[in-house]
Amino acid sequence: MKLLTVVVALAFFGLLAIGAIAGLLLYRIVKPQRTTSEISMLSFPGRPDAVEFIVPGPGKREGWFFPGLKGAPTIVLCHGYESSRGELLTLVSTLQDHQYNTFVFDFTGHGGNAGVTTFGYGEADEVRAAIDTLAARTDVNASSFGLWGYNLGAYAALREAEKDRRVRAIVLDSVYDFPEEMVKVGVEKSGLGGFPFMVRAAQFSFRWLNYKYRGDPPLSNSFSALAGVPKLFIAAIDDPELADLTREMFSKAPEPREMAMIPHGNFVNLNDDDKRKYENRVVSFFLLRLPATGRAVR
Picture (tube, rainbow, N blue to C red):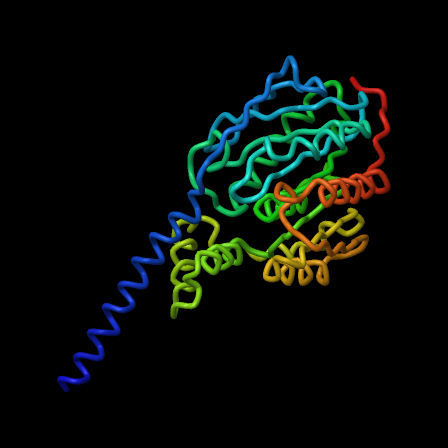
């Protein structure tokens, strides 16, 4: 009995320790270090405008609108985890050079915005609010939007696209099916993924923090809503876990769909040559699937 008591006590305190460590680790994961990006609207090429929009709950957000051909589609870029809008400006410029209206902004917990990330649950509402505001402009096609997103941004973009018929084409780089998968990636990258129950404890804590989304199914359950919407999935060989998740999403997605494997992931960290190839692949997809043609606007 004494031995059993000791074993039970050790197991209890071991689980308690794992829970405490997992909670602290999760806090670090969902509250990444923020970096702000400022540009001079007067001197930056492309004549960008600062556009404010309101997200129910988080409140006011600001993005940069880069005008293209009047009445052309608008491409909304959704940055990835631990990134910001300022790191996407070369992709912005490439899209604008091909006459697309382009918009970038920072998610909650990133850039200049306080808060914690929900790995796409709440961020999809930010994408929706941005599209609603842009659609009210008189210089864009209010019913034609393209989305590009990387990991966190890809999930948010896909979540919004499944509910919004204004989205006519979408690029999903390193996308996953439900946010707990991104928590697992974060735990494993911290080096603590090998500890027993650490991943599950962190995922449990994440689900508790996002309790209001407890009934939300995986995004692939609603893929039928995107039948007929062109989709480009991008996976990086040097990020095998997210690459596997992305390939799995691709296999479940309806047509039309395309898959691109690239050697290195995370657009913002690519060298100049790889970045140009990446930009050309994304722009080629949009040019084919969502031509940058203007039309009469109100």
